[in-house]
Image (tube, rainbow, N blue to C red; front, side, top):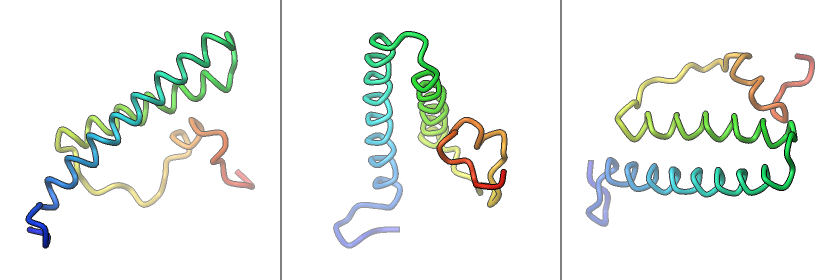
Length: 89
């Protein structure tokens, strides 16, 4: 599938995932810096867990792990993101 400028959707996807991986790595470095300043912070620990989950997911996508995703999000997965919990849960 070609786009008007000659790039393919696959090339665009690969470039986007590379940029996303770099952004996640930057965020992980920043989280490590914050962690050094705030030892024992539960919020920083949560950030580390979330960023590592994102890093793993991006790496899987970069390796071709593009498959249909479930439409319902597993509540155990949501528990990693305390700020995203749905009200009434």
